[in-house]
Length: 372
Ligand code: NDP
Ligand code: GDR
Image 1 (cartoon, rainbow, N blue to C red):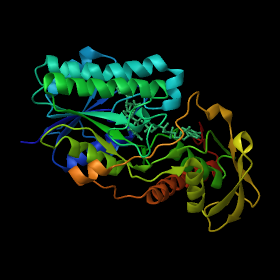
Image 2 (image 1 turned 180 degrees about the vertical axis):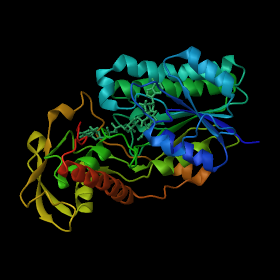
Image 3 (image 1 turned 180 degrees about the horizontal axis):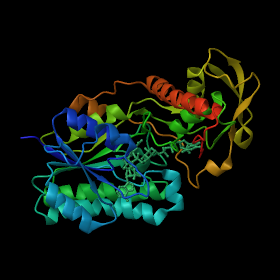
Image 4 (image 1 turned 90 degrees about the vertical axis):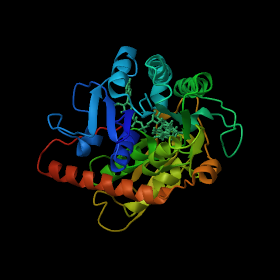
């Protein structure tokens, strides 16, 4: 008998990789997608199955983490062996703009799911994974951060995720549920949302190189992050639900770099060498050399990166560095893709898109070049 999984947030970066991973393992995968005014399933379109054919193993349901009746109905219908709660308002900066909605989805949404599992009597059958986050460490109390490091959340997003973390622990301890938290550090991919910093950089620089945009406007380039590849991290999400007893794990690479470094790598992938000048809000990056054919729109001396205070956050998380020792020793997990390899993959994909758009523009067609 195939195992059955239910994924919230299936249309997101992690949801799409996890769905692929579970399908390859022979699971029947159900996912919850939100109603939107236009199609929002681009990341899973390649695994979509026509609902009119029999024996489907990939099934999408309309739903929302703010609606407990709908979550209960889907759980009752699907009776999953495993639930992966990946759905969230996941943007830290946006959580300062929409704090109440973020709390409703990220904190209360997790409670709604756990409570629905319990009310349906599925608490002994259904294993539960909660997408917890390194943002819980916020103003860091220890370097590197591990499972025992105290939390100090610094945004409405992180505070909501703190509630979700503890309610998951609480349902495990109160009702004997197999429920666990993956405390994941930043992970990226070509499927990363366009407004998170890595994708904003790879997409922005590829567009600039192809003449579709003039400048990349950044926030705090001193921020340090421990970046891994989403493909490596969803493998660990699954591993966490296959153990004898539920435990929480930090998932990270154990290496950190600055946002500025990620900009330099991305530029290098395009054949562009940048020099950074100035400090704080006057910092900028200037093109000092160009190699190869990927940046026909640029000249030496062009200023292509500037700071815009709009992207500073009311409270910043300056540095995050994870210690994945527990995941390595207890589960044998190690990341396989380095941050530099990931950066190269992201730039290559965004360059392909930018080249297609440049060609369309050349022939007088409209192209989507919206920037954050
Ligand atoms: P994304 O932002 O790419 O995906 C979020 C998903 O949640 C999307 O499918 C989105 O739907 C869905 N969603 C948003 N609001 C609701 C709602 N009200 N009801 C139901 N679904 C909703 O995030 P990632 O894939 O990057 O991250 C997955 C999870 O892991 C998130 O919970 C995130 O907070 C957490 N996390 C992510 C890390 C990272 O570095 N990527 C690190 C640590 C934790 P739609 O497509 O319609 O917007
Ligand atoms: P983060 O990711 O807030 O860590 O949350 P993001 O990529 O948005 O920011 C990382 C760091 O880069 C700095 N930064 C900028 N960020 C954005 N988005 N845009 C900019 O222009 C910019 N300039 C500098 C930020 O200030 C920050 O320090 C992500 C999300 O996926 C969360 O859901 C997840 O929980 C955490 O990672 C772990």
